[in-house]
Image 1 (cartoon, rainbow, N blue to C red):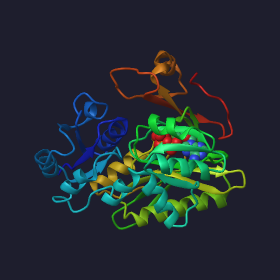
Image 2 (image 1 turned 180 degrees about the vertical axis):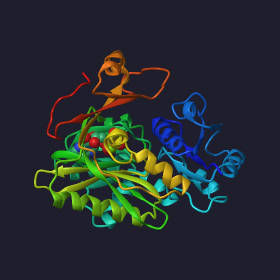
Image 3 (image 1 turned 90 degrees about the vertical axis):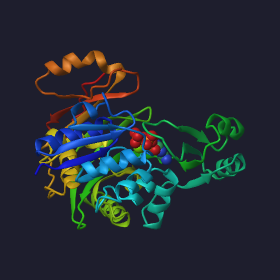
Image 4 (image 1 turned 180 degrees about the horizontal axis):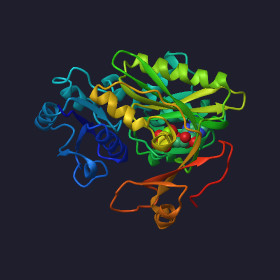
Length: 362
Ligand SMILES: Nc1ncnc2c1ncn2[C@@H]1O[C@H](COP(=O)(O)OP(=O)(O)OP(=O)(O)O)[C@@H](O)[C@H]1O
Ligand SMILES: [Mg+2]
């Protein structure tokens, strides 16, 4: 019998999970408030367009699928809890979704597991902001606890910043202040974990951000074995703690002294592992589709060195050149508008080795 997986969320990650599922003969059913004519809805077997708190729609969705996953960590976990009334196992776990939605919870979790984090302060009032800024050694990042992505909802601050003006500008929302890490590199880690707790690692990736948005990823990360081991130990520890079934990504900073410092987690495929579609023995999307469908995982090894570059709205004019470049794999997400600063696609290409500095997007 043909299996159907449910995917909460309608973006490009859902699209790429649905495409990978189709290759396995697994159908994808997208649930989102804007599922129709969305990047994921366009390539799916079925769509449900409904709010994440529409219980009747969630019940019908749960009845129509054999497994579920989320492509977006800001889906309310109550939606997953409702689906869990009908399915044995939901993926990611409710704990994983709840933790990843809140930058303060994820840093506290990392700390409780003995994973190094930037120094951080919980800021829920202007008075707490004044105290937190006074405690900051020099520079820092002030971030909304919830709903941030691609550098949105955050600002650079220092211990001399004007707290009244900043509190206003951040809209009085619950915040986290983090000390700035002088990193030499940013690396991300990705694992897949099945319902029995077995784990498959993906090769780690090195990331470069521009204006808080991921610009390029290069893999496998040319990091020492000791740092890589630290990263894999940390992410496995987090996955066990959250009883996660599915895909888990962890972003981290590598400090000048080689320490690995936790930044954030995402219980879903991650932008920095898009290179795995062409560059690894299994892609993160196929692994996610397999886990949602209850199929066995496969080992993920790199096929040489790869680079991924994101395409933002302003790069739209370069797409014809990428289609024509025989070395480039072009992925366009089917968004209606090419808005500046929004991710509209990505490209990947093989490198002679991961120290190769050539970029194609300008
Ligand atoms: N404490 C910090 N010290 C140094 N750099 C930081 C710090 N926090 C964030 N940054 C920089 O800003 C980038 C984006 O931050 P963060 O990962 O918190 O935001 P995000 O909005 O979730 O981004 P994304 O969606 O791209 O992952 C980081 O990858 C890093 O380059
Ligand atoms: Mg990030």
